[in-house]
Amino acid sequence: MSRPRILLIVAAVAFLAWLSWLAVAVAQKGKSPVISRGQLTAATHLLVLEVRVGEDGLPKAEATVARVLKGEGFPAGTSVEIANLPSALPPGAAGFPGPGEYLVPVVADGAGVRIAGLPRSPGYESSSGIRPSVYVWNAATEAQLRGLGAMP
Figure 1 (cartoon, rainbow, N blue to C red):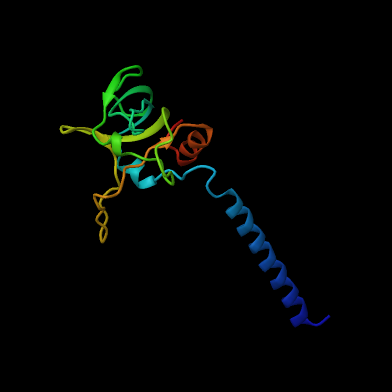
Figure 2 (cartoon, one colour):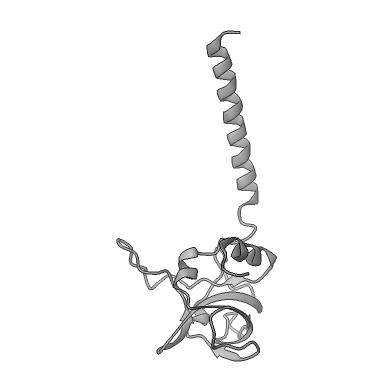
């Protein structure tokens, strides 16, 4: 076999391997939302909250702290009011999934407690129309946080 033919075969095998990897990545897309690293950076506290839903299907502003992953001042079992929790939505969801435990990155300052947004970045100003993100608390979310080093 000539050298050009061998290079063509090697290139074809590499191309098919790349297409196979892309197919696997697409098949796994959407199984768990990707936690925003920017949002984690902006948050002063990472809380797992037991969120309740009102008659309108939106989360109530008051939730119970189930677990504290980062920060102090919110003991487990206490109730906390988060200003923008009723407008929160998990990434990629059409509506709020319902009551349960959610990872909520929050900012606690003198003005109260709110869900963290993205930090300021040169050339990017976040719009006020973006709904804050919360994440359904499950094994995949916990594994992502461990992989990011956000929890022990």
